[in-house]
Length: 370
Image (cartoon, rainbow, N blue to C red):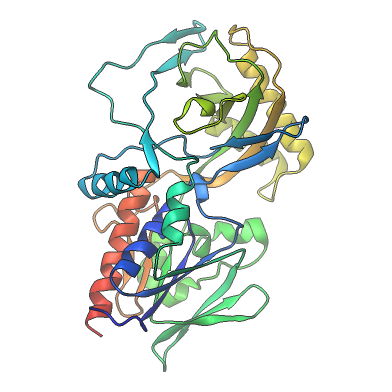
């Protein structure tokens, strides 16, 4: 058993970091988790919006659902299901073809993996894991720098405004912003981890290609009865790639019908080319919301006017490659640094979970020998 005085920092509270933190804590390691935003979840976060009439609207505006085909992941999901954190989303999904302007029923019974969603929102799992015994979570705390102290054989974490965030035996970077050169073009600051400290890993991390995407959150007073599916992909559209009815998920409020649409990567790239990588302005987001909604309206589905519509940009959330398919995470044994996330295994929630499990396992093994 590892002593509880062994401290590890996990940076990033998406599902990969949250699973990693939980697994480390269960092995007796004291974990401090740092998250720059107000709450956990990353792409599994939930957006809270308010309609004009003051009614609260909740949207899963990132990952709509996840699968559990991997054995280890399935074990975790069954545990989460027993705790009421996730449930199976048993709706029928289809595909809409923009050329024929018709729906195609894609799904044959028995061929489709179960789709799981968090209850009451996609962030439920991350939230629960971040508050497990042995995990101390610090939200709204940005790590500005990760320094390796050669003499002490420890990592020192420094906040954005220079404050000392503590010293740790090991570090898990579960947010690719910690290591991505793209971070600089968005913020103007160097990424928190100086890649010259980990030259072996730097080669793989040099530039992880990503697929940007805009999400549109819309709410209607009445159900959209002309749409026969609760989730559908869209082909042959230059603008939209996906749509799902968020309020059809188990454990959701049905006081309004809420949908989330995802743009195509090409559409998002065009907008980013015009406006840059910095945080999009309200004017840009309003224009995007209008264009995405117009595309939905032009499908001939008799869509009523929504009571709420708002766009969100996922600038670099969806990785377009897998950089550690075999090892499932990047690992520097001498400095006890693990880098995990969906970009290591496969660009989805399940890939992120697998990578988080692998990172925790590497650290647990090496720390138990110290």
